[in-house]
Length: 456
Image (tube, rainbow, N blue to C red; front, side, top):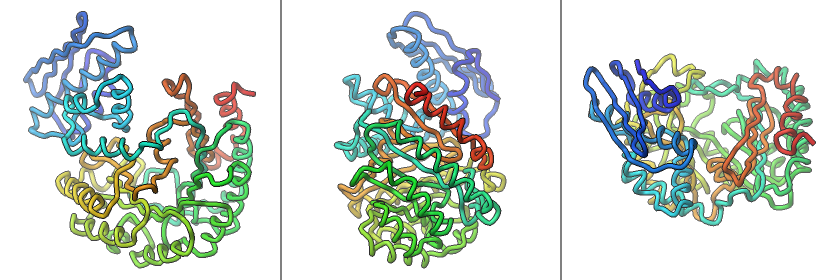
């Protein structure tokens, strides 16, 4: 159990506690005197005291530094108690690069702050490489990105916590959902001036039949300027067909995602996927006939998969030579069935997988161009997008760095509007449940209008 005497520090400090798993009772006390921040942490009856000094101006800076130093003190105390160090140290935010950019904007190199937080040298170097890869793409407040969500899948993967469900059970909602989506997409036209990119995601957007897919593509088409980056997440290889690829090519898609997750057939069966590694090869062969950039997703830490099996998946993915390879670390949230079956994966093995991915992808000529982290992530690692030079996805950079407005349409979609040059972000979320979304799409549109243009 964790207890603190300062309530506004509780949430972020709990994020630090969560990194270390099961621990004895922890107590924390905090006080500030002038520009000195004092934190006392008691673990299993042993008290450790920390004092950090930092001048600040105003309540906002005071709370920022109070949270920062409290997390750091707690991390150091728990690290000393357990003898464990985390790859990202005391950083618990999902976007380490945003903190790096903030330091650079203040005229400081980001590395000293990351070192203070205990971030590993390898991860500091990774962040530096991501920032270099984003040069020319990182463009705060340069426009708007469009997201359209298709929450239908052929089946529910055991690790999935999204709202998506087996299309055999939710198929009756497809056309009502698409008609509601038509309304929301059409309403977006008045909410932006410059569109930087568009992304149709899921779920598995290719799970519905070709008629449904064309209906969505036709709705999106009036919003797209000529030549805009346009990604369609085709999804699982067993639903990718030439007919569907023809359709997205016809409507101007420039990028397609093939979500392999692994090339190990035993793992695919274990997590509830119907396709095989051979289906991935077939999907890539089909996509090769089109001028798309192709992304391939892999997941490190899938249940029962060894580091060697993950390495073979990496080798298979690199051999297919997609423009982008995204390496996710398994994240088990409470909505995932697998969460109920497995509590904690072997951090050493997942770490070996992540290290292998970095070594092989760098060697193959890929560079990391975005990264983000999640709670409940195996081993406290990260998700990283890798790209061949000149092939980075604008949408991914904008979304991960939160540098542009995002108009998100569909169930569980969250739109974001930037204010004050990006210093403040307002969000408008749609209902997660598909029938509720269908019934309340008018309300969603009204809330989005209010956020993006004062209700006009």
